[in-house]
Amino acid sequence: MTILVTAASGQLGRLVVDALLARGVAPAELVATARDTAKLADASSRGVRTAELDYDRPETIAAALDGVDAVLLISGDAPGSRAQGHRNVIDAAKAAGVAKLVYTSVPQATTAEFVLAPDHKATEEAIAASGVPAVIARHNWYTENYGTAVARAAETGVIAGSAGDGLVASATRADLAAGLAALLTEDGHLGEVYDFTGDQAWSFEELAAAASEITGREVVYTPLTADEHVAALESAGLDAGTAGFVAGIDDGIRRGVLAGASDTLARLIGRPTTSLVDGLRAAV
Image 1 (cartoon, rainbow, N blue to C red):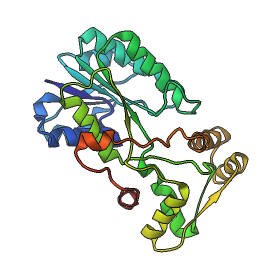
Image 2 (image 1 turned 120 degrees about the horizontal axis):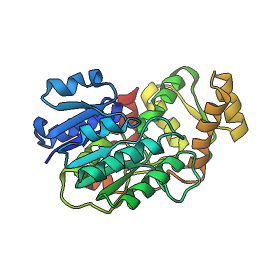
Image 3 (image 1 turned 90 degrees about the vertical axis):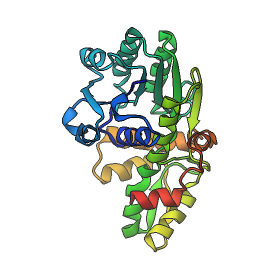
């Protein structure tokens, strides 16, 4: 069976290639793809076949999928404008007769009012309409996303945000990659929608406590209103649109979009997921 990984030059995609090799997939049975194949030198050096695949250039997708049995479609990195690129991959997978498509979505993609949801909702709907055999892995937030906040807290003693009492069931990229490798290599799973989360959801007070343990100084969580959060982000140099987007993520967290912890990922990888403290310590 030949497995293709899209966006294999990215932080998650590289780890998926590592996880597939660790599960015993032969390098010759892997295809690592990216817009720029020069960024795939590490995979190539291990005998993994590489190919150009640009979500916005369908001709590259069709060529890369020739002879491929399973595809991991890692969501694009431009929120708000990535659905068409995803549809291009789905259409090519259907035309190539791909037997399994795995897609990285977000929690409550089809039901939640969440700033990240629209692209994923459109993609999940396109997958369903295509008839391509598929598995949806709805990824919670990356634990590593808070590495910068912890590093900053080492200087300021503060983690600020507008998530209120919201919880986050984050997981590390490595754990998520291991789960995706399981979906790609194991029989079954077709038609399933899985929540990929850490074993336990945490609050921002717990994030501050983890930062205290890692940095060796007292760190407190300072809750902000949405307007205060946007103003703080703009004063830090973000443009208004980006500041509103970041605050919108905290709004979704406050409303519980990322709160649901599941044991699905732990069961797939055969061990507990990495704790918040350990994941952040590695990221920092």
